Image (spheres, helix red, strand yellow):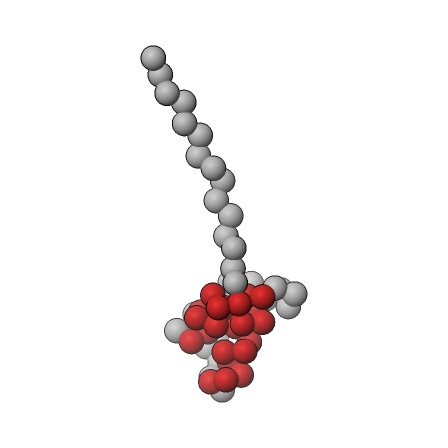
Length: 54
């Protein structure tokens, strides 16, 4: 008897707080799509700190 397992494809879900976190620790943005919550959070953290991590 054999067991068949299938891996589910993983999707990356980026949130507002992921963007803020990346900016605070100095990482460049993963995406620069202005319509995403991730980038809005990223820009909010840059505005709050006044430091651009890139």
